[in-house]
Structures are given as C-alpha cells and as structure tokens.
Length: 515
Ligand SMILES: NC(=O)C1=CN([C@@H]2O[C@H](COP(=O)(O)OP(=O)(O)OC[C@H]3O[C@@H](n4cnc5c(N)ncnc54)[C@H](OP(=O)(O)O)[C@@H]3O)[C@@H](O)[C@H]2O)[C@@H](O)CC1
Ligand SMILES: Nc1ncnc2c1ncn2[C@@H]1O[C@H](COP(=O)(O)OP(=O)(O)O)[C@@H](O)[C@H]1O
Ligand SMILES: [K+]
Image (cartoon, rainbow, N blue to C red):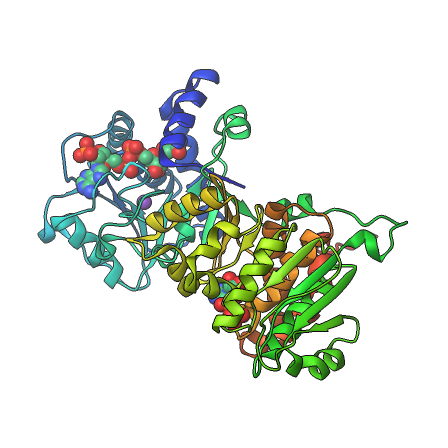
C-alpha cells in the first residue's frame, strides 16, 4: 500500500475535486460519513456519551460531519470546538452551520482550560483537533487540552491521525500529541505511524478509502510503501519444475568465532530453509564439528585460524555472500573482511560484526560491492552513520549513505524499513516474538538465500524481511511471544511461504434450515 505525504494528500484532494466534479465539502461529507459508518456498525445505537473535540480546520470539519450524523441517528453526542484561532476553514464553517441547523444550538466553544469538560472513563472521545494540516507544535491551552484528554481513560478514536503528530515530519513536542486507542486514517496510513518515536501514539489503525482520484493514487510516486501480504505475494518468484540445485544458487556464509558458532549455524540453516540450492559456510577451525553436526546439508570450509576469521579463501563463485554473524572485530578479522570485499563480485549481505568491522575501519566502506545489503539494528546503524536528531534525520542520512555506496540498507526495527535510493519500504509482518537472540542472524541467511535464488538485492531484502516477520508470527501463534527462539523462526520459514498464498477464510455464514 502506498503512503502519501501531507502535501500529496492535499494535492490528491484538489485533483479529485477537479476531475470528478465534486467539491471539497462532498469529500468531507464522505470522510465523516465513513467514520460514522465505522462507529455505527460497532455501537448499534448504544447511548454511551460521545465527546467530539474539533479543531477549526478540515480535520475539525470531519468531526462536525461525524457529530451531525451521530446526532441524526439518535446518539448521545456533545461537540466541542477548540477555538484556537478565528481562521476557520470554509468546509469547517459550512458544517458548523449544519450542526446548528439540526440541533438549534452551536457546538460548545472552548477558549481556555476553564472550558475543559468532565469526561467519564467509560465515555468515548473523538479526536478531530488536528490532521495533516498541523504546521507547528500545539502550545498553551491546546497542548493542555491534548494532555487532559490523554490523562482520561476513555477510549479515544482519532480521525485521520492523532492530533499533534505530523504525517511525515519529525515530532517537536512529544507531550503535545494525542495517544489514540484507534486511528481511522483516510486513504493511506501516515509515515509517522511506523517510526520508533511516534508509533506508540498509534497502537492500532485502519485505513478508510474516501475515493480520492484512482489515477492520482495509481500513478503518483509515493512517499513510502507499506509491505503486507498482497505486496509480498507479488514479489515471489515461482520455482521452475525442471530446476536443479544449481538453479537456486550457491550461498557462501562467512560467520562465527569461538563461543559464537551458533550465529553461523542459524544463518546457514536459514539460508537453506529459504531455498538456496547450495550453502557453503566459512568458519574458524573451532566450529568445524559444530557446523557439520548441526547442519549436515551445508558444506564447510575452515580458516587457518582456530578461533577467529583471518583469511577467507574459497574456490567457487557464490551468487551471494552473507558476512558477519558472530565473527567479532579482531584486527585479523577486519583485514580478512577487507580482502573479501575486494575480491567479491557478488552482492554481500553484511550484518552484525560485519558492520562493526566496517565501523572499526571506515576504509572498508568504499570496497563494499555494489548492490550489497546492510542490515543494521539501531546500535550498528549509529556506529555506521553517526547519531541522528530524530527518525526523519535518520532516514535522510540512511538514504544519503545508500546512494553514496549504491547499497540497500535494512533498518531493523519493530517496523523494519528497507531503504534503496529514494525508496522506502516499511514491513508490517513481524511481532515481539522476533525480539530474541539470533533473530537477526536468521534474517541475514534469509536475505542471502533469496539473492542466491535470483531475487535482486532490493526485492530479496523486502521479501526476506516480510517472510522473516511472518515466520516469527506463525511461530508465536504456537509458542507464545516468549517461547519463540531463533531456531523456531527458521522452522517456520516453510510455513511463511505457504501462508503467503493461503486464502483468508471467509467469515462463517449461519446455516438456515430450509425444509
Ligand atoms: N485529501 C484528504 O486527505 C482529505 C482530508 N480531509 C481532512 O482534512 C484534514 C486536513 O485539514 P486541514 O488541511 O484543514 O488541516 P487541519 O489538520 O484540520 O489543521 C489545520 C488548521 O490548524 C491550524 N494549526 C496548525 N497547527 C497548529 C497549531 N500547532 N496550533 C494551532 N493551530 C494550528 C492551521 O491554522 P494556521 O494558524 O496555521 O493558519 C489550520 O487552521 C485531514 O487530516 C482530514 O481529516 C477530509 O476532510 C477530506 C479529504
Ligand atoms: N518487537 C518487534 N517487532 C517486530 N520485529 C522485531 C521486534 N524486535 C525485533 N524484531 C526483529 O528481529 C530482528 C532482530 O535482529 P537483531 O537485533 O540483529 O538480533 P540478533 O543480533 O540477536 O540476531 C530484526 O529483524 C528486527 O526487526
Ligand atoms: K485528529
């Protein structure tokens, strides 16, 4: 699914109105109507008090439409307008009058803290204060209103996005954002929903289609892409019935050191399980028996050094190399990696200590083969590109890095982001079961195994991250979040492929007897 920026959404609004001969007011009616339908379906007329807090822009206008529809359908509604300026939007004003016409009184105007209403914890709060038009951090009593609503335990539903957050810009004041229980976003999720600093304000969201111009949606290069099952399905390359092991590529895994051979085992197994035809693993001597016993399907080459990698020699052309899990950063290993980079003609998936070796000796950077894939978690990324001011600054720096060295960067997080040139792909498939030692080593093997099978570096990264997340989720369904260890993620790789093409079960119909 495409993610558009706030500017693109404003543009889409304009284009839709022009091309489809409808007004912004019609669009607002549609948007508010969609929120109403969502609530009505769940509430079925229940008389729970609903408090709608509107700003004075179009987000507030959506709140007014919703309020009017709820009132017309007999709900118990109070509408408040946070009147922080008199520059109300046109569509807001029209809907403000419409509310008056049906209720015979104006919504309650709020101009200071003294106007904050009492809200019971079982009531419902609708947050329609700010949407994509926020252009500075809320201050003064408006900030206090946001904090007042956050302190309340009532269920909070945000319209389009939690008020106080920017769609695609860094947060200025984390104390001035609504923490919503549920967000109903129009047409597209917003990029901030997925970033570490802001995702906590949006624990759950749904996207409502408000019918913006399909051509605009289809043809416009998005700000970012969300990868979920339908997108991942399209990336899959079917296996040829007449293939042999060589067709599916030979992966070289360079991993392990004394005490960390498990990392080599995990990457090797993952690479085989994802479908690499042949895997050879290069390790220090100490790991020989461990590797051969744990993964009989893999071939093993050993370093001359007993405990760490010092010189990486092999006499074949792998389609992809995975480097880093458990190798440490001793001087001889850094040098061995340098020589490997110089020699390799294949893309390299660089993870963990492979990245730390680069951080130790930055001259390695320009030796990284083009189209390689770097898979840092937060700490590794920081050692690679330095610190960042906020999530958006981080993405900007990663984009510059990826362009400069012509590589793909996989920023590992709860919502992992794959960065290539100017493109951003956000993965949605994982869960907290993946937060376990060795999980990253598994991902390294998966991505390398996909490159070996002929996926280009970008597709291998995007699909690999998706399948890794999906395997974790499937494992957690049987073992709980806590029970999943990295080996379980590997065991569920086959299920993650099968799940990719599993039809969603249609909701069961009640059987009615006909005699
Ligand atoms: N195509 C779509 O997606 C559709 C979108 N729709 C809806 O429109 C929403 C966007 O509406 P919008 O552009 O009117 O902006 P919105 O968020 O209501 O707020 C802007 C107002 O707030 C003000 N202001 C800003 N920051 C402030 C601050 N810190 N403190 C105080 N004031 C501040 C700013 O005034 P300023 O003082 O800057 O002049 C301005 O008046 C969108 O989220 C969705 O809900 C649907 O109706 C239909 C189709
Ligand atoms: N809460 C979470 N939700 C989704 N994915 C997660 C979560 N925590 C960790 N992950 C994923 O698990 C992997 C952990 O990798 P990493 O930190 O390198 O682990 P290790 O170094 O132990 O192998 C990454 O792919 C990351 O995106
Ligand atoms: K809002």
